[in-house]
Length: 194
Image: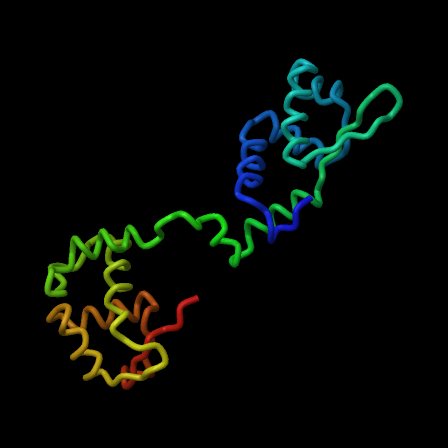
């Protein structure tokens, strides 16, 4: 079994394909309770033994089940360690890059910015949709240096490059946690991104 750190995306795809069937999910659920033979699973699921064998082969190929011989029967059990390793891999934040390495994450923001920002850098209008507004705000907040504190007057001067409604821009930047402010607005600074 591969460690989660070295798990290729093809193995992830195989994992999800193995689980992309209602009967295979039922088999996983039944095996999570206790090991079963093909015949037991076939009877419980009202399926032919050959169909259950096919599903078990797909699950075994993905590393989710294994079999051990007991007399004339093969008893199948869920490989919980492999399932846990896959879950850890999928939930680890530092692994996100592996899953999206060939995806243009900023494409949506660029499209929105090209729609709402003029060639001279001015905001034509405030988007109504929240996702589009967030994209504009992510674009605007880049004029502020991380770690630098700004007075409200400085913030307004910088925001006036984008739109005359600096109060709305300033409020939106704070509301969407892209900027933080001290107390009643004496100082503003760019929020650290996770």
